[in-house]
Image (tube, rainbow, N blue to C red):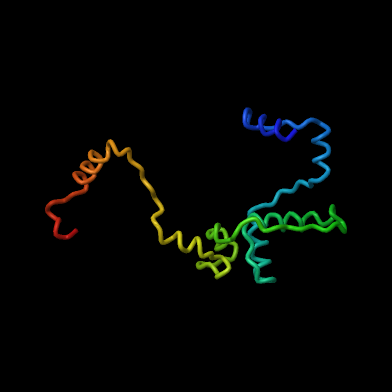
Length: 148
């Protein structure tokens, strides 16, 4: 079945489950929608109360779980963190109402990436000479050559 679903998705961009499969899968899910404000509030509340910085995806999961406590009853629920908060600096800053990220909002890989060139341009080598000449002609100012 899984192969059929994958093939169907690749061909049509969607999957239509048969009614038995849909009913079976539906029993394991509780739908809920979480607003941006609830997400920001959850990030802030958890950070202030537990000194743990959630990424937005995990904050949505926690907020959803909290809002479903009535339906869940005594059932146990585990929310796994899905991303590092360093991937979402603007969201973290907004949620915490701060200008600079706390240490938990940084990751060595993102800090290192900030030091590297972020734009890459490719050029067909057959056109490289013409592209370089054009760039030099349009940006080269012979009157200010000593200032470069």
